[in-house]
Image (tube, rainbow over the protein chains, first blue to last red):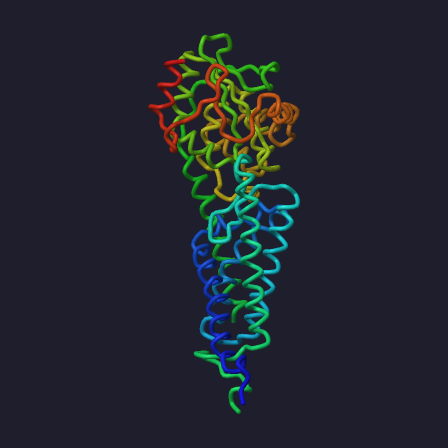
Length: 163
Length: 216
């Protein structure tokens, strides 16, 4: 007799894959054609040295697109989930760092980004909180997918499904 | 395979960036230098590059050479400001800021070196023409700044040495330190007769600015 989680697990997996994969695909897709914006946005966090930040800014959109596609199609779900989860943790850390230093920037999550007018400080802090909560939710999706990588409509079947 | 895709993307982006920078430099070829205009340094007013001091209308322009919105201002209104200087219709003070990074410091220093040659106006215009959308990319090295000067007609070795040695860094610093004193928090900030110019139209509009200057 199946537990109710076992019954719904394949659908939950699909949902988690679409949520995490979908957000990553859209975020990456919007940035892929604007590498300079992405590089500037990453440098605005002032965490990495400028040249490394530019490289990270160039690489990130492609990484997001690739991981997003893998998750949506259900290929190498566990690996993609770990990568996606790590990305979310890095984002959360970066936003906390900027918030703690009292900086006012646009996260650049879906394009754009950079230093904002100091008069926008109050709304920026509210935005930081929302971004952190969103990324936390997505990180939890990644965690779920690590433990339950196989579900509905996935291209790769994992060993547990072949039973 | 994923790594290959990401690496290709990165290389593609980097090549695109350097292509844009080179194309921008090439765009300066054939520029004719206008006659030199003498400027002074106004120590009382943030050590700005000052033209025609003592006239009735005073315009203060605070810019960072790497600031993209400043480029928009220059594109729309720069030529008009330069004409006000050349036709001696207003006192114009250029406050050259550099808070966007080391590259801004180098470019600002070069601006002061150009002012020493009486060519700040044309050099400033050229800088904004080739301004890279990627900030602190390393584009404005000493050599590139000298080559920008050369392309528009500033060929003296005095200018080249000034750029390489950073001879005017003290002035750059004085400008930077004066930001707080004059309540400037971002760029571009423009004052007309001591009052901040607040634009109504979100894009820089020459007609709007002209009206503000002529009505001041």
